[in-house]
Length: 178
Image (tube, rainbow, N blue to C red; front, side):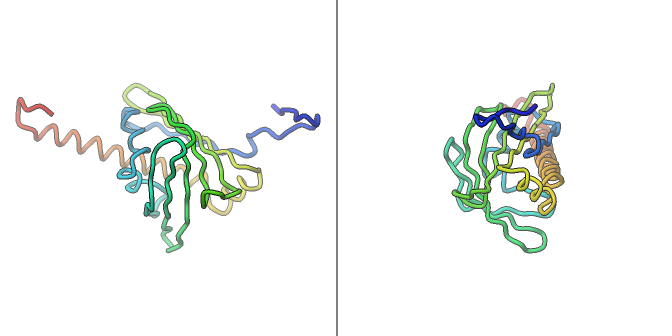
């Protein structure tokens, strides 16, 4: 559906500027949300396959920022900056993501953490300033596959956390409080 601007010209819908990726993760949404919002977790899973992350600074609050470098498997460093715009634990996060605080090509991401029984469905909507920037992200940076891999890394990391918790509970002395 096209909307009309004040000049009576149809605006493009955001559909040609967005990427939507979702995944069901086998853990309660509070844990999935925590893994997305604490730097000690993020550095363990953030990014596509083969990438690592070095955090320079991290302040998880509205208008706070995460300044970090993603290190590609080929040795390329990618300067990154995220500013948190909305935080509603454990339901949703909105953020602005670019190479720096004032990046004119920064894109918005909206993350929804939906309960699905004992699991969590995470929906990540990314909206770029233009169709051209979206297309460049898809073609040059493989944003769709990278997003899928990132959520896959999150799922694997949260599964590891869940297993480690279960292992700790099994090895606790009988009758001990956890």
